[in-house]
Length: 459
Figure 1 (cartoon, one colour):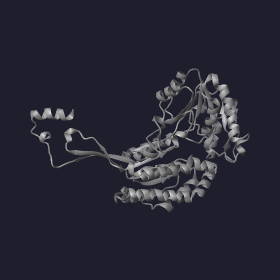
Figure 2 (figure 1 turned 135 degrees about the vertical axis):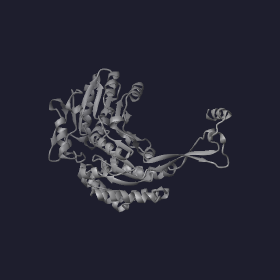
Figure 3 (figure 1 turned 45 degrees about the horizontal axis):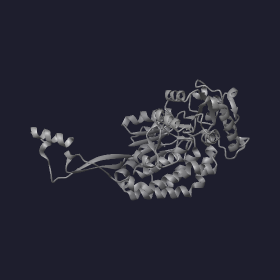
Figure 4 (figure 1 turned 120 degrees about the vertical axis):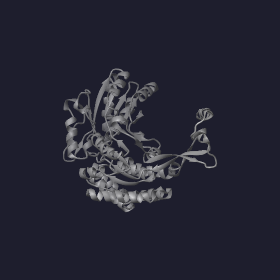
């Protein structure tokens, strides 16, 4: 798509938005209902596309992508009328007689830029929230997941007119053209490097932006933890989608006294969940492309591998891999891993672990495994992070009842459920002043008695 065509598309959507059609709650409900029906109709094609792009099984595709999108639509359909209501607020006595309220209003034309690791979920879920809030939307899926991008294009084209929702496919050239346009809101999910560029481009029009990035999310295992259960849940969260999850545990940070036992349990769980030969497991996926496959293999230091480590360049698969004896200065700790490689580091005291985590860039997620409630409260209170779990991994994002988002270097803003509706809405603060009374004290000439009255009113 050329820059001129993209400009025309933005103009077409803005013209449609200015008709006021999307302000009608019935219109939004109809749009979401239609989208849900269309997803259900094309569920098989979506699953096949995810399998071709990332090797995902049908169960994993539904559990982690399609099912979550359908759940978000159902949640919005249930709550949209409540979310869209005006909210009355108290009016100060000085503004007697008035009614004050906040009115949610859509921004207008929204750009949603999604990544390749959960290509359906991370394109469609923000789309659902944006539609519910009353916006028109242009979706830009990743070029790295072409089959899913094509499926999204087909689905959206069947479900909506271009002036309502449209999809722009392509790579960097299309991304650049899109970011040059004047959008009313930008929602970006992806790497920190591209997120910085999206934010820089948004600043040209002072466009508000949400950034869902990533980072090195720690998984802290305290000495009182149930190690067998911790290992089971860590292995699930880390190696889901071959580790290509923005909230996957990036590394384990455990008490040095329980490290050896934890590693034994982790090895058992890898074998139990993926078999003796994970690369032959039909439900174990693959790395997105050769570039990332090579990058991940370069991070694996053979002398520190205690489980896994093998890979297949033909299928772009890497075994679930554990590394021991890792230091924060090692190459594997210098970037977000975003793959099936799990380094294990140790601390001597829990306070040391907290200090170290706080010295690093704020992670998107933090996980702590402990039976000590005070320890859990301490680390979740004192450390800065986007969201997380106590005694589990990644499940905090699988609900529409809580917002999901980053903090500091891991992003800004959040979405899911009410948070998602609010993200794509501007709350107008309005005072409805009545005309039957007009107090004279604010008008010149000012009088001494008015000063006393104003002091009373503003108290």
